[in-house]
Image: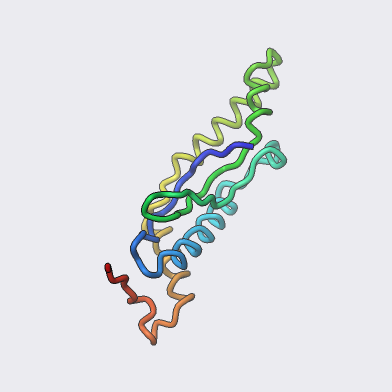
Length: 135
């Protein structure tokens, strides 16, 4: 299996003391969004799936939505001389191109992520106002 990066919204920002909580919520909302609006086509159900993947960076770990897919299988389709195999290959990449072009930073998605985050914290205690202090 290999993966293709789809992306993130950017609601969770490194350096924010609530980064990991915000990131978790952001990934959940985005996963729900993709499952509801861009479900894996039936033809690819056993060949691909969405997940949140952690990437390592000098400033800290972060996550993005990715599409895991059976690269070896799709490579064989690409190399095949059978027309149906080539059509399946083209169909997969056409579908992925649609997913990859989705704007994950729309106001609507950002508002959904914010709402989910505010439901997860005690606003009366000011938990949503926490900041990190540099040493």
